[in-house]
Length: 425
Image 1 (cartoon, rainbow, N blue to C red):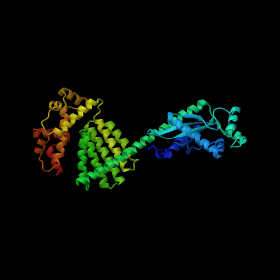
Image 2: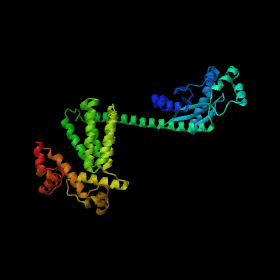
Image 3: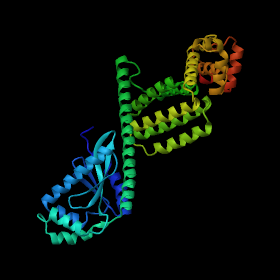
Image 4: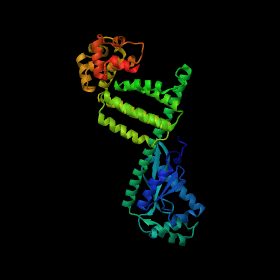
């Protein structure tokens, strides 16, 4: 990255838009220069004044200007703040460094002003340093074109420019991070496809029926707040979607919007705040409308679903977060067994009363509420398989009584297990 230039990392049109406006607002001349002091662009409509143009009309004067810019640019980078200097012709200029990701790219040169009207001392120095190469009478006349700016005004302009340049840099750091995220997302998809080829399973995704089955399982993981499994299944869904659509942007956008909407509702069912979830979903939908890259779709949906999951578990204490997460994982892995809060607490080396408090405090439900929710979610999956009867499903998910299973299932799903199963076949 150290060999990169400003143009490689900062959008020239945005640079012109922001700094061009700064130039128009202040009436100051602004240039973007590289590490060598070479001018890359004059920003805004403020050209070099007649005096500076005349100085640069001579090759020796041009070299001296370049040397001044280079020295100022390096000094500004050294201190990472605006650097004021007088060029060889006595003009006041300041440089604001452009440092992106700890790499010095160049600077923004501003000014070409005088702090007071040219006096006899200024003119004497001017003649001494430039009269050999340029007509001194013309220099005296041209210097009248240089704007006068007080020290206070100059310092204020330099401070404001420093803020503006830092804004531009931070914006581009964010863009770089986004590009890296898109690149990583693309690599993940390619890796998933390669793994499928090696396993020779699920290589070709041919129907949406298969996709929707995976989607339902993914949503169940969101309702349970199982972040790891939800994220793993999301990756599978996105790879399937890319394969099925052959990368068609319009279709992918529709499916992504659907997935985000379903995920928001699943998160609310899992305990997330409904108002907050709907607000997040609205922002996501507005953002997706402006996207035209597959990788960007996938990165954004990863982020919004992670936000939904975070909304289910708003845990401030990391120790509590770890305990609740481990308890939840223990339940998911052992729901089919006659597990109790005591067995789970013993597994975590804490007291049952402490675990009970954590569930109520952090998940807003009891231990048994969460265990029941997991069992019902698993029952829904098994009831979709014709080879399992309601009685078998009841036992498989940990219910000792089929009648109690039917009562609980109806409470959560709205119908009895038998009616639900009959509606599927």
